Length: 170
Image (cartoon, rainbow, N blue to C red; front, side):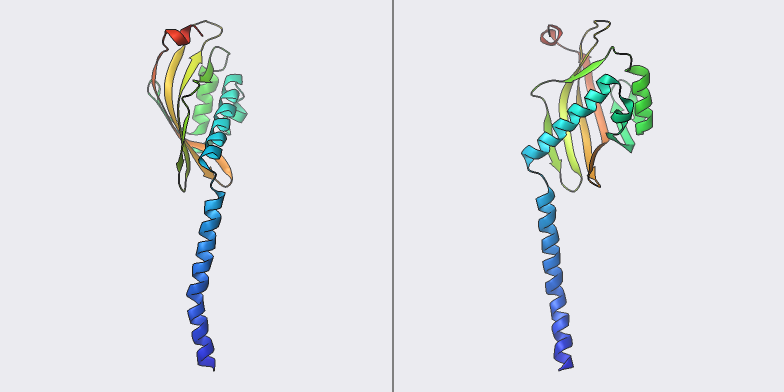
């Protein structure tokens, strides 16, 4: 009788493991937002990020990045770490003569399974004090979702140029 009981337990273990793994996979799939929800989350984060950038709220701004951030900029090179990025923003942006706006209709968001999302778009930079030409550039932000938080791990900011006449008339 003991042999049958032990054999039953051995047979039951793989079945239980399969059920446990299937349940965990189903729960993981349920925690992944729909594409529309993911888009809305990232769009909202982008708005909050650049609201803090435009107001020079550096404490809030730095909270959107992981400590080991990599920021690649076509004109300024590479900035490694959120502390260096925050210091660069303090030195070069704070003072009120740069305001960033997302170009309407350009935001794209794609799921990166097991990691987070990639955000792609075009943004413009206005100079309200000096009334300088409006700049425009493209960006790619890699958002990592970890421990319940969405933060940016990598940024590529490129194709910076003076915006066309339609943007200048804005």
